[in-house]
Image (cartoon, rainbow, N blue to C red; front, side, top):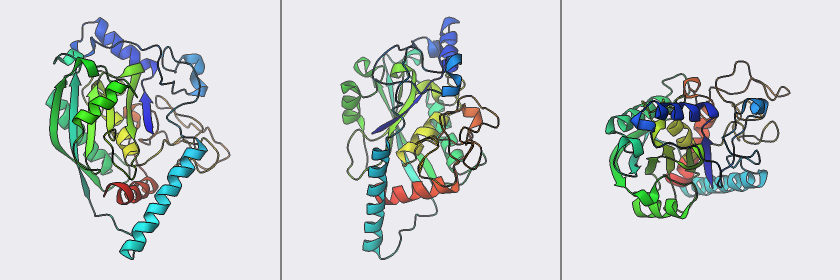
Amino acid sequence: MTLRRTLSTVGVAALLGAALVGSPAAASFAVGTGGDAVACVDPAALGAAKARPGATAKHDPNELTATEVAKREKDLADRTRLNNKLSGAPSALAATVTIEVVVHVISEDGTRANGSIPDSMITNQISILNTSYAGGFGGANTGFQFHLQSIDRQIAPAWYPIVDGSTAEKQMKAALRTGTKATLNIYTGLLSNNLLGWATFPKTTLDTYDGVVILAESLPGGTASPYNLGDTATHEIGHWLNLYHTFQGGCNGGGDQVADTPAEKSAAFGCPANRDTCPSKAGLDPIHNYMDYTDDSCMYEFTAGQVARMSAAWTAYRA
């Protein structure tokens, strides 16, 4: 199961505009018009063409079905009970868990225009992750920190762009993924179908598909404005640590399975004020949460409930 975040029309236009004026960082960007990924749509903004260009409005693959959620939640509960039984008490997470990170930079030809971002963007991304996950921008301290173990650079036209769910993506990860279940492997490059990124949920058995894929130009200092402050990685790693979108399940049921994130009917884009898509439920939409779809400048928080969920999943699957 993978989670995906897409560029809005605004983000696509920004990249294309940069290419048209000769920005080497965006020269290879092209608008995808088909494929297996479908639009992340804000129903309230369909008239403003908020959907990914060329996509059709149908089921958003970023949202799990109720059956899929129930299966995942049962597995997490079963594993947590088993761990508690074996240890004799609920397992406590260390005050700080440091996650080793391996970044695989995928490039078509070794140039910035075709994926080869500089080391400085990667180190800045790690800094943003550490501040975000420590609650430094205003949210809860998650207890997770990140250490850049290595940068792996690959000039690989056969893997570029990275196409979501493709045989080439699976071959790339099988060849490159390193470390244990606790090692975060991040793959950067130009992505298919205007996607900003995707990630895998944790699971019991490690396979080489495990990891996070992000648009190279979404890293701090990239050209994917308004998604170039580093929060695509923050968002996708949230999925890797077992968080759902804040709009998972809409206004009904258990939503994202976190009690302190208000219910939200659909993904939010931009930074809308006083948005309340579930007026019968308490609280305004959590547009500042890293697990929504708002602009990077609008995101700044994880909640205490999300911290508890990430901690439980880490103990169950990755510790």
